[in-house]
Image (cartoon, rainbow, N blue to C red):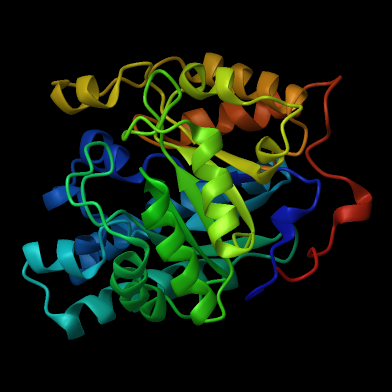
Length: 325
């Protein structure tokens, strides 16, 4: 599967949900600095992650769709790892273990719809309040460390990017390593990035600076109500967005940070909102969750996306992998 991205075809691929909020609020895990990769340091934590991912394998198998599994490495980059007491060797081991876990899970599944393993890269600073803004060269140097350590994954996905310079740096680092990359921006309630930049400008600037290297773009960690108005079906840049990993809650990032309890929203409504988006933007193929979501929300996505009258989940002509990115 490495370097072949079947989600570039017309079929729907499900993804997992909000791993950190699910583990903390629903499964009782302790994640310092919101770092799920720390669970890999022990057998109990590894089993917890294994069970988390297998739940989504079962959801996709029941729905008959492909699946994108995102490694638990959103915080597994040098700056965040140093805060958590990891040295260079420990960080490399954690990134390797995270990918190996997903590869084992994939290998143990019966043949059928494809399972894509993505190596997750997160922002250097707080994705919602980026205080340490990197230039493109600095971002490429910083993220190259983790991208090299995520070998074995089919692609690298930079999640919760808040400004284009960091996204450009990730894309350039991935290109230098010969790795396909996906860029996922996050937006505020008004549809702009945390820095105030319009989403359209961020996508266009990243494509222009990288010669269109990203395989596609995604949006994550925002409710559909926040980004849907910005997605113009007639705009060329919108066609570069193929995936959504949305929040369950309509709260802003600032409100979520201060919330004493998890806001899981309405899973049924969650599915319906995404069905409407796919009807409007039929090139969307990857659907999962972010903060506040769990397997209930992804099951709702599968049900809503498979309802009669819209684009099908799978097509006979797209059963095999798409051409390499």
